[in-house]
Structures are given as structure tokens and as C-alpha cells.
Image (cartoon, rainbow, N blue to C red; front, side, top):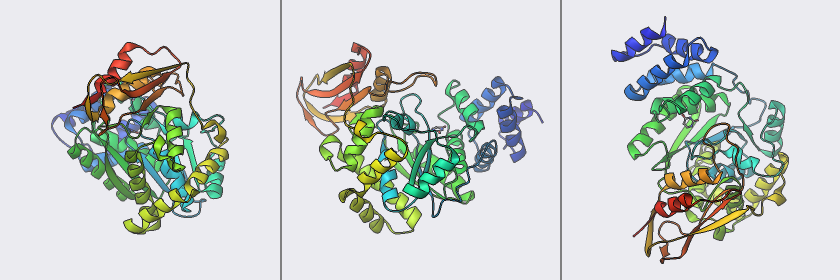
Length: 416
Ligand code: URA
């Protein structure tokens, strides 16, 4: 077998076999297949797609490229969640302590952000002292003791995805449903949880721009998970507008903590609604209860303070300093004003995400250093009335804030 034969099959519209896909994943991971041949196959997949069987074989071969985490020494049904990535998406920070406070073990491995979509690990690392690198034993002990641990992915978890994702990122092949599905599901399955809730983002700030694409991605991932014996539920949520009021690592931690603590004036209903839906789905999957019971339980632990207390316990358990979650301080803070009067119709998530990267809150390359305190606070949200000259957002950065970034935020607002 060789790569040229695989190209020929793909060109003729034939399906790749399990052996073909295994050959490609093994060869690329171990270095015997060069980048140029892997890029060519990735672009063929990006343009021609993959059948359900091909996508499943790709996921399986990727899982088998490295370690699979064994969580059997954690009691109970382990639940995980995954978002396909969005702007201002701090849902994990809110829902994981909610679920843990309901007694369900949350064993979560998360990633760093790349481009406009943030990563939970970067957000947690913005808290003084917080440790995201845990040994397997520390991770398991924390889940058994506190019902929650969130850690960075270990070195040898799906090495095929590390190589393939880096290549996709520079060859225009990220936005492919089978490649995204295999990338996400291989990591989720290798992370060992029994159940997974998938939050599939749809809109300008997401990989999936239309409802139809998002539904196809959701269906593809759900089918893979179920074929591999996991309980999987997918939910499609809006990513035309940023979620909540804060975009940026420390700012998002502050907002998540405010929401858990019931300080709604520091956050927005859209974030609360989304977190209640995702947490309710996680509880339904893990505890086998219906939507009404799950939603009531989620609202109860939010209202009685147990979810906020669990968040503090989780931060401390991983070495973080809760007293650091009070405010973010930057050398520069600039206000952005409305240039017209009317109602905010939409806030383009893509432009807001790009502005947050310029401020230092996101990475352009894997090596970029982050400014944890940098980011954007949206003062006006969708549906708000504004007048010409009203402050609609604040920008924070430890570097000088340029006019282009300010204009980008003004452009992001459609005020009608
Ligand atoms: N997130 C992933 O982990 N992989 C993708 O391909 C896209 C989003």
C-alpha cells in the first residue's frame, strides 16, 4: 500500500478501507508519510468528504495512535462535555462545578485556545497558582475527592491529532466535518469518560456557519460516540454573537464566577441560559433523569450557592488562589463608543474574536504568548438601545491598543 493508491481511490470517488486509513494515520504519526502527502489527502477529504464508515475508521485509528486514559478507578458515571469552540465561551467553567455539586464525577481534559476560539486551559491558567498539569493519580484523586478535575491533555493522548491538527491549521483543512468529528471524538473517547455532551457552535464565530452544517457535525459525532459505547448528546447553540459579556481569559473566569455567585449584573442572560441547557443535558445523561428534573436540580445548586462553593473548592484543589478572582488589571483600558443610535441587532463574533487576539487574549500560532488580563467587556449586548457616543465596550490590554482594534469592535456592532 502507498499514499498514491489512496489518492487514486479518493479521486475515483471510492471509499478508503479501514486498512487504508490505518496506514495513513500510523504512517503520518510515526513520520514515514511526509507532510506534502498528508496535506494532499486532507485537502481531498476537505473537498470530497468522507463516508460515515471512513470517518469512524479515522477516529478509531486516531484513538489507537496513543494512550487511552483509564478512569475505572473513579466511582460512578463519568461525564465530560466539549464545545466546538466559540467567542466568549466560558460554559465549561460554569457547568463543571454545577455538575460536580450534584455529585456527578466530572473528569475533563481540555485544550488551549488557537485563533479566535479560546481554550479552557488558558482561562484556568490565568488564575494565580492554578495547576493544569496533573499526574494521572492526582487527576483521579481529585475527581474521587472533589468530583471534579480539569487538566490539560497529557503528552501521548491522540498524538495523531496533534500532528494532523497542526497541519490542517496551515493547509486550509480545518473546516471539514469528518476531520473535525474525528479530531474531537478521538480526544473525547481517549479521555475515558462514559458520557459526553457536545456543544456544537453555529454562526459567524464558529467553524460551522449554518444550522445544516452544525446538525451534520452533531450527528456525525454522536454516531461515532455511540458506536464506541459512549452515551453522547449534542446541542447546537448560536455563535453569531459572543456568549456573555466578557471575552479574554481572566475576564471570562471573573464572569463565570460572577454567574455562579448569582451576580447577574456582571454577566448576561444568554450565558446563564446556555449553561443551564448544557448542565441539564450533562445531568440527564449521567443521572438518567428527565429534562424537567435535571433543569430543576441545576437551578437549585445555582440558587443555593453550592455550585459557587464547588467552583472555589475546585480552584483550591488544583492550587489556585480564589482571592485572585476579583478583577483584572491591565496597563491600558480604552472605551469604544457607538457611532450611531438605535438597537443592537447583532455583534459579529468573528470580528470580536479577532479583536481579542489583537489585544493579546488569543494566539495566532501555538508559540504566541498570552496576555491573560487582556480582552473585551461588552457593555451593550444584542437587543440593547444605544445612543451615538454611548460606551458599548471596553478593551483591556497590557500593550498599546491601536485604532484598528477599536474600529473592529465598532464594525462588529450592527446598530439599526
Ligand atoms: N476542535 C478540535 O479539537 N478539532 C477540530 O478539528 C476543530 C475543533
